[in-house]
Length: 265
Image 1: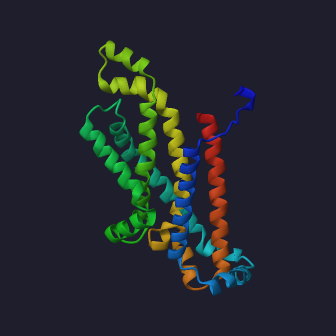
Image 2 (image 1 turned 90 degrees about the vertical axis):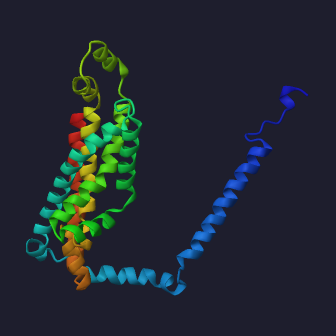
Image 3 (image 1 turned 30 degrees about the vertical axis):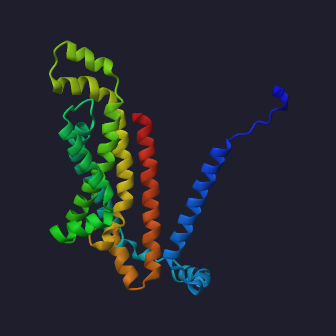
């Protein structure tokens, strides 16, 4: 058979069968998941009408309520996000160092750091908030600790990965010169990873601004407290004002972080 007469196919029969099996399993899992959702057709068909009615109740936006019940909550939200991020940096820096296997070559510490990072990320912010509200009581302190503990997994993991990607040349040169470990870290590792570290910190602060807006729903302070109160009292025009304020603050935080990261990186 000539080469020109051959029929070229992208996948072999075995590969096509494997792809079909994967798609079939995915379809079956999706169908099984839909069965557990328990969609009520009557409510689903009525959803557009309910959404339209909700937007009608939320209009016009009650801007006059801003200084009375929103401004203080927004400022508190920013304080929670900022203090929580600072707490995260203090806690995540040593954990990230322990997680980096090229910096900390003690397996027990590596496993401990991994456990801390996974534990922090595996629990949702609202669950952490409920826990710390029960410990410290409702208010800003519970929110700050919630943001700080929840963010350790994010900052520590990315910082540890940045350390593991650092070039070995400066490190080996300082070790050959007999430099102590603190000097090696500050002079060889830190100059390489500091832009990534501050970029991660800014990005996490941006995320924390959004999460700080939510944790108030369970009593951890911030604008979420005002939102929860307005929802419970069916004050829809105030709800729309709070949502607009959260949206504006998140957009401004995104713009600010983007501009700062351009100058750092």
